[in-house]
Image 1 (cartoon, rainbow, N blue to C red):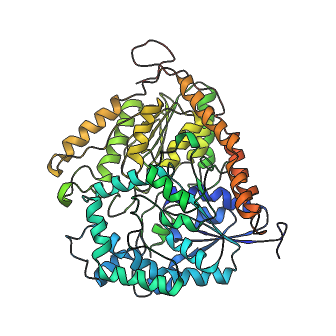
Image 2 (cartoon, one colour):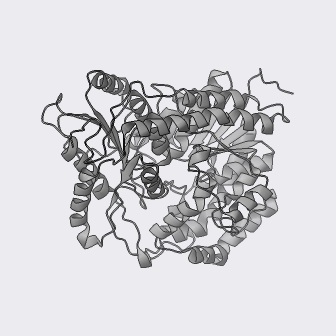
Length: 547
């Protein structure tokens, strides 16, 4: 039997989604630094961030041949090809419908390749995203390999609300989704075949009974949640009872933060064949220079404003990306496109903080994703991606953000007040939470009819420019962040959970050391300099900001 001092093989299975994969990178880095093999199954666009940890990259397109041979890869597997194969190619069939009907069909095609890959690696354990990579859980279960789920939202209690937001954005309802699950015969047949072949017990209505459950978590030894206990969304009694009955264990670990200078998966355009598309997620070469300029600005008392609208809405997802509009009632597209939303948000930041001289006004640090069609003021540094964690740690006076889970918890940890301009998914929930906690404000995404989009974008720009954090003091934000950080330290979640759940196996105790390192980094993570006291509008207190 292997011992904890010997080399082990870890398999990480994550989607081409920066917010889901980034928290796994410091865990992979820690394992690799201990001398273990770490292998990722993902897409080419994530390769550079993965290999920066010391892990070995594998393309899911090359591994999952049953799915990809003869089909075109897309952001969500090969759903576009499958929708045409199964008669769902008509424009009247929206993303919600064909994703619901094809999910288990695609899963059946993924499983053989993932099972082969894990077997060839002789993997000791698996870490995976339970929201987007159920094939990892099922393949691990079939092979008897222990798995760890990494849940990158505000706990299992946030799933029902997040699912509802997504269903609503697609113009559907719970009842319609349930009907789709039960009525599409090819899906029902795929589920039956998987259960017969692999003994997985997959349900045709797995996200229901109760609504919002993640059935794959019942097969994982532990589910790590990238928030703290205080900031988790509460679970309904029904959902809590399901997880308790299934023996699901949750441990909050906070935002898993990497070492300074580490690469992160960033925004990208999806293009399976283009070298440009594959490399667009790479970090720019001047990350260290950006952080150095932030430190210089803080040293001389110059304010720093960070701006990022995330990696998805600036990308080319056909449903929620740059050119996409949300679906409204009846499946009718309405509201601002990702492009209109982002340009209005960036323009508002430039209106509020821009200067004609590079050394005047605040220092603006702006992440644009793969889009570059902006005319920034002289005092703005605009890049496809920025070293966000390092910039926040160095200290910012305001963070204009989309409110993704990673960005939200990282802002709390750094004590940065936020203005949240949410796009979709859990972002509106985090925007409301920022206001409830008193650490920032939200500017909701407008949803006008298409003919009124330009006028709505102009109003949105003005509103974002006008909005400013109305918290009593800057100190309150810093105190809250430090209280959150202390909760991460006291819980020591990774060590407790992984020791308890893997000690019997005798093979996985080294997960403890790797994730403990991440939580220790979080526990000691502070802004490098005290930040100015931020005044409530009109109260005359605190240090004024130039808005």
